[in-house]
Length: 391
Image (tube, rainbow, N blue to C red; front, side, top):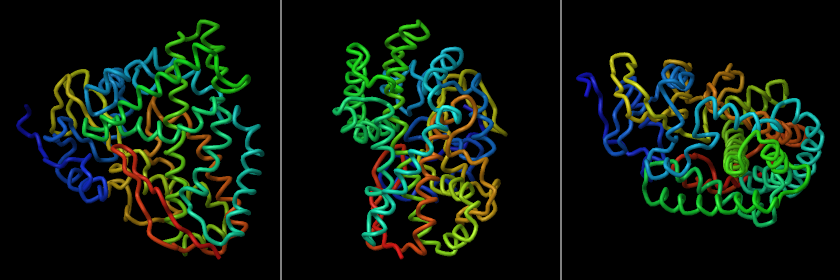
């Protein structure tokens, strides 16, 4: 390979690195524009500029061969919205995103705001609660699951399946193997939903079936879109919401700034997702030989786009480890970039803003009220428990 190649023996999917990835990301950023990971067999692209440009160059960095770090999983997930290129991706995304556009979501805003207000009133009256389980999960596991229109079995297992789906997209370690087995369960369940038309009338799932009836997609493609509603829509929003309250608990000055000026809410959301990116990164297949600075990536190799590293890149952000809701962070890569930018980001923002608005009206100050516990996942980074006391 290229003489200028930098290599590293960092295993980004090991427990030790997952628990504290940021020093390792910095080593990769400092080592070069692209660094070969010996243990995983992929190129790590970790700097903001390079990740952003690569995500916007689908001709070279293809999703059609899958976005996992292992071939075993990529064979299973190819052809889905996440794992496809145009024109197939454009066709699938048109169906997936139809109920997720700002215009389509606008009628739901009042309902989401009311649900958030009621839940916040309940939790604040208790004085203590878990921001991860009691608050952050509430909207995704109630309103969103109802909107998707799944059966009771599907709603009960969505969190389990979502975590497993992301686990499977890492290197093929034990977590990925267990995740892949559960991906088979998701595929079987979604297949039954399509074959038996077992979705709530008028739901997002029903609209997928209608698109298949019109011939816009095949029934099998409809199965993939149902899975897209199950896997990406939950943990990402839940982890971002829990991280937001965790950060405000640790930085009371930022909460006071937001209470004094609620127009900073958008900045608070962006800064949370920048600093605590729920998705650490997906891979892409390099379709032809490509050079990033002085590093040559061979055709057929695989590149890992490290969103979470890019969002803390010193070359892009001033004092990137600092939580600052006044920072102009709207161009963070927590939702990705390019053609595969997160389809559900507008819904995530509505949910998070609804909770934030209700909390601003009721809470003077947060403080941590116990040990914070991190979730374990190959690709996701988030908090499984955030005990909070409110004043």
